Image (tube, rainbow, N blue to C red):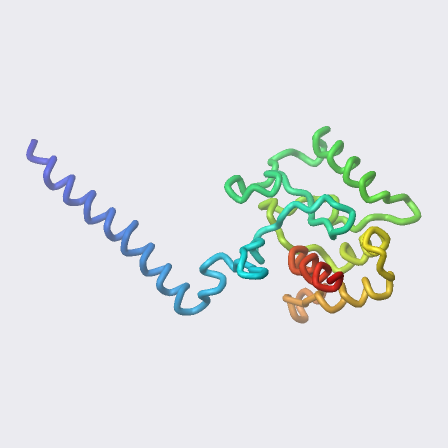
Length: 184
């Protein structure tokens, strides 16, 4: 009985420091330094939230650019890889289905990032090559020229790695929103 009160006090202090104080400190620091990303980088259109700049969303219509495959099916609550080995029949089947959906052939190989899921399964970006690979399909579905579509994609591409990682990437949600604005 003599250890119960000190144990409760220790638990309370630990809880206050590790849970309440630490969380408040990190949240306050994030709000002070980068409030946009600390609040989820929510993208709004007409005052309505349409998604987050940081989390991939599922697009399946031929009128839109498609993101990378997602092991948790774009559910941020279950963000994780599939934990399946590269020899998994399930992964092979998913890759074959994805390749078929894009209509890839040996003469027109698909960029790897359009077939392989990212580690967390929620990467909102695809490579510039992955976006350009989809230009013909989206242009045809929208009745737009391939040239206009390529210009839109190039305008949305960013380089985040500088000289260490010069490959440009495209945020799929932002690209699709720009595509919708172009169509208006």
